[in-house]
Image 1 (cartoon, rainbow over the protein chains, first blue to last red):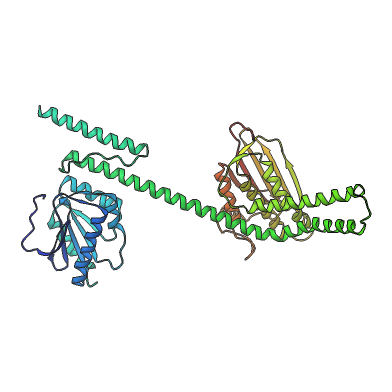
Image 2 (cartoon, each protein chain N blue to C red; image 1 turned 90 degrees about the vertical axis):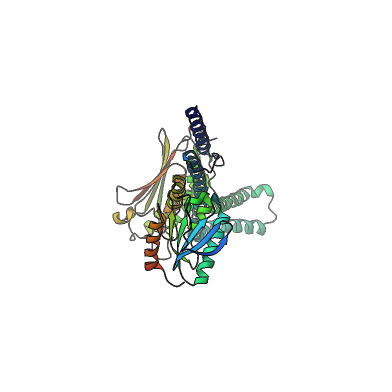
Length: 144
Length: 312
């Protein structure tokens, strides 16, 4: 999974210094961090702002697939950022793709110690993440 | 050769983990295991132990903040209860002050009417004047002590002192309401480590409750409040017992809950017993209720002795 290649079918969206965003299909967005990405509170906030901007441009709630396999570290302050409720939340679901031992450790801390404000699950592959995220979009997606 | 290198790497990693966890154990949350960011088992172990240290640090900080907030809320509750009780005491205090004030006025008028008297002839009157003024000072001091805001400040204390101060404050009121006050105090008990102001508040609350309980009795019923202080090898105990109607068994389990009151609207805040319970608990003691033998209410405060038993 660490050698993950972005499928051609994914449409590239504006990027940040931490990584790139893609539209997988419809309202399903993928966040693909740069390899070796270490998330701090500041970079977590920038990622969240980027997602807000994408959803606002689109005018719809999004489900997000996050390639955690490319992340090598996330500190507690970054985890807190994702657990703070935001007004006009644009995310209806987050699917964390964690196929490596380190990604699973990062995902476990993220899920276990911070009750996320949106439904979040960990998956071993992109396919499983995509299926669940689409189901969540069907049930909880829609206009912002 | 390769096996020896792996063994050395694992040993070093375990030493790093042990160092982080030892630091956490002694309250130092800043130590981290070095990361290679390779994502191998040793790197994952370092991430896990570092994240654990971070989370424990955050949780400890959060706990400290919540404790501080809780302490502040409790202090505010204590102060609110004090102010409410002071309001209830105000009328009685005014009356208490009025008696010596009247005596001072009368004695001063008498002295003014006979300016020819020598000072030596007025000695008796002046002594009475002085005593009346001292009595007023004691009452004012009692009110000031009771109303003093404060955090728990434990000092070596003779338990009889705050109890007697509370009795002094309420004895007059009880007497005017036809209540017989029976006091049985062991004055030379061993010392306790306590905040005398806060204990005074507890005893004033208990005596005020006893007074209020007797108000609901029909005229002609005996009105009695009994206060006892005694010691055991490990503690001192104070009981305040009244000859009122007691507490309904259904209410008994709730009387120490904040804002629970059986008094009428505007007559009680429901904070007195709750705050008293908190104060006594903070002293490592207990405050309990039990029906008295004749059906009234009996509250018992038990406070641990100082290890050396001496109040200096």
